[in-house]
Length: 285
Image (cartoon, rainbow, N blue to C red; front, side, top):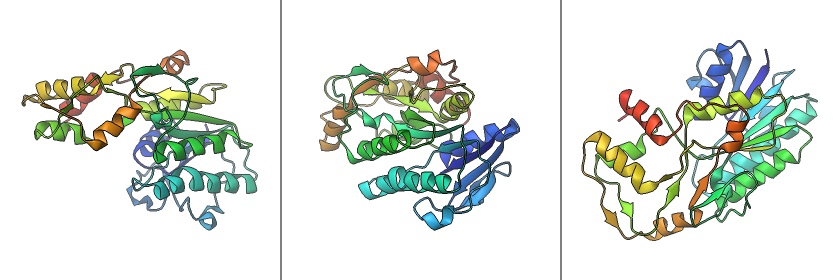
């Protein structure tokens, strides 16, 4: 059994920690307000952006998962979450002379800038056009350049229990299909985020970078129309894209999970249909 620290133990981290604790691993969840953590995850009250709060990390750690997320959609928040926080944690681990098997970092497919629906994998060029992808990519480089063995999991759009905004918009008739060529989206269910991280922790020598997306990059309108049919509501209309939707076309891509599959991971929800069907069956809308 391993001693595990999950830094930024939120939506994905809590699901991962619950899974690991059920197997007998000792799990600590680091967050500013730990009252929402389940009882099988040990609370560690700290702020990743305040180095002084990281001086008493649990000793003898084997594995660290960095699953922090920005708390606002701006450059300052992304820098704090993905660069400064990670820097502070790695420095604290180094100062405490922790000997780790590996540090895992949840990154984003936002590090890719492909705009024409091209397929991308772990070897594709990473030239993020937006501050979010730039900061996340900066965090990747920071970890992989550290003295600790590191693995990055680049996650697509995360959905799952409690994250039903798309379902709600379709139900309320607010979702629209942008006019123009296909706009591909890449998703992963929260349980597969946790499952992939759990799996990679058990891989003897994982590679440095994996893509965490399901089997089927899906055209946005296909997803909206499928949800409308399942909900029994009117199909979304088509309208010219606004300025924000035009920008979204700049990151139009299809992400391949072939490397993660080849490592031995089996998805619980291989496509958006599987994941959203489970949410709808669980009363997720």
